[in-house]
Amino acid sequence: MDSSAPERSAPGSVSEFLERLDEIQEDLPKRLRQCAEFTRRHLHLIAVSTVSDMAKAAGVAPSVYMRFCQVVGFSGYSEMQHLFRARFAEFRPSYQERLANLRKVDVPGARHLLAEFAEAGHRSLLSLSNTVTSDGLERMARGMAEARVIHLVGLRRAFSVVSSMSYMLGQLGVPATLHFAAGMLTDEETVFPGDALFAVTFAPFSSETVRLARSTAERDIPVYALSDTDRCPLGEFAKEMLVAREDEVAGFRALNASITLTTTLAVAIKALQKRG
Amino acid sequence: MDSSAPERSAPGSVSEFLERLDEIQEDLPKRLRQCAEFTRRHLHLIAVSTVSDMAKAAGVAPSVYMRFCQVVGFSGYSEMQHLFRARFAEFRPSYQERLANLRKVDVPGARHLLAEFAEAGHRSLLSLSNTVTSDGLERMARGMAEARVIHLVGLRRAFSVVSSMSYMLGQLGVPATLHFAAGMLTDEETVFPGDALFAVTFAPFSSETVRLARSTAERDIPVYALSDTDRCPLGEFAKEMLVAREDEVAGFRALNASITLTTTLAVAIKALQKRG
DNA sequence: AACGAATTGGAACGAAAATTCCATTTTTTG
DNA sequence: CAAAAAATGGAATTTTCGTTCCAATTCGTT
Image (cartoon, rainbow over all chains, first blue to last red; front, side, top):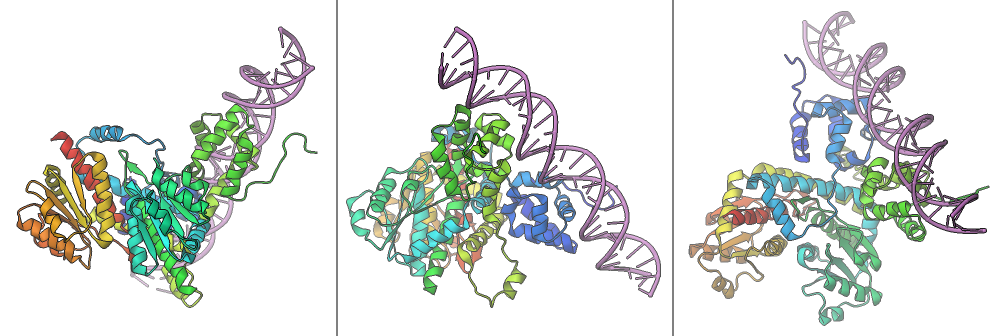
C-alpha cells in the first residue's frame, strides 16, 4: 500500500497541469504553496529557467521547488519543463494538406478537438509571454498613444484581429479607423501626418496590407506592425513590429496570442493617453 | 595581440544581434552561414533549446554552432541564450504585494498588462474546457454541418468572432455568409429553409442580433447560439447554445475562449461534412 | 512544555550540457 | 597540382544543472 502520497501520473497538458494545481494547492504546506502560487503567476518562465532560477524567484530552496514538481505529479523539474517548451511548426502546409491531416485524426470528436485547441491556446499564450519584449510593447503603445487617429488595417485572417481592436479602441474613446478594403486609393487619402497606422498580416502576407503600410511609411507616418513571424515584409519599414506565434492543431490556428496582444495594446494605449 | 578574430563585443539586444548577422552573414563559410540562416528564421527557439538541439536542427555539428556564437560576438552559446532569455525576467508582484504597493505609483506598464491578459487567457481556456459539454458541441457541429449555407451574425464585440469564423469556413470550403448589418430587412430575405444561423452576442445583448435570430427561429430555420452567459435571450429559441465565459482584467476581456470555441467548431463542421 | 511527525534547506552526488581540442577534410593560393 | 590555410565534425574535458539525501527546524498534538 501507498502510505503517503496518492502518486498520480504526470499532467500531460497545460490544462491538466492547471487543474492539478487547483486540486492540491489548498492543502499544501507553506513553502510548497508558495511554489504553486508563484508558478501559477509565471507559467511562461518555466520554459526558460533553471530550477534554481524558479526556486529563487519563488523564494524557496531549489530542493523545495524540486519537491513541488513531484507533488504535482512529475518525476522532476525536467519533465515539467518539457511540458512548457512549446514547439511551433515552421512550415506552412496548404489547406489540402491540412485537411489530409484532419482526416488522420481518428474520429476526433468535437470534445477532443476542443481540448486540442485549448491546449494550443495555452501554448500560444506561453510563447507570447516569452517573445514579446517589454520595451517593444511599451514603445508601440506610446507611439500609438500619440497619434491623432489610429488607422487599422488587416485582411483575411488578420481582419478579426483589427476589427476587435477597432471595437475596443472605440469603447475606450481612442480615435481609430478600421480600413476594410486596403489597397484602395481612398485609404491613402484618409491617413494624415500626425496619425499612425497599425497593420496586421500573417504569412502568406497580404500584398494589399503591405502596400498600404509601405506607402504610409514612405510618407513619414509611423507604421506599427503585428505578424506571426519576424520574416514579414512589414518589418522593413515599420517603426515597431511585434510577433505573435500561434500554436496549431492539424494545421489550423486560433488567434489567441494575437487577440490577447492587441487587447493589451488597446488598454495600454488608453492608459497612456489618460495621464498625458 | 589578437591574431585572428576582430573580437567585437557581444550584441546587447536582439536588434543588435540581427544587425551583426547582416554584417557578417555574407562572408561566412558554408556551415557557419547555415547556422546564421537557420538562427535568423528560428530566433524563438534559442531560449528553449540546447546547443545540440540548435546544431542538429540547423544541420551542423555542435562545435560548429558553438563557433557561430563566437563569430557573432558572444563568448559561447550560454551568453547568446542569455540574451534571449533575459527579456522576461520581470516578476509580477503577487496580489498581497500589489495591495501593499497600491499607494505607490500605480504604473502597470505594458508588460505587466500583457502578463495579466495572458493569465486571464489561461483561465478562460480552462473554464471553456470545463463548461462546454461534449454533447452540446457535437450536436451543434452536426446540425451546422447539415446546413446548405451557414449564416453568421454578431455585432460589436461579437463581430470579430463571427468574422474569423467566416474566414475559416471560407477557407475550408464550407458555404457561409457573414451578415454585417444585422437587423436589416435584407438579412431575412437571404436566409432560406435548409440553412442555419449561427448567432453570437455577449451581454449586454445586441437587440439586432437577437431580433434576426428570433425571426429566423420562428421560420423554423435552426439557430445556433454562442454567448458569455446562459442568461442570454438567444437561449429561448436556439436549438443549441454554447457559453464561453471570458476572464477579465480590470474590466476588459479578450476573446480567447470564444475564438477558440468557434475555431474548433469550424474545423469540426468540416470534419463532419467530409465523411457524410 | 515535550514529543513525534512533517517540512524545510543545505550539501553531496550524478547526469547532462557547454566548451575546447585536435585529427580529418575541404578550400584557397602560389 | 601541390602546399598552406581554413573549416569541419567527432571526441575529450569542464562546467553547470538536476536530483537526492539527511540533518536541522518547524509545526501540530498530547
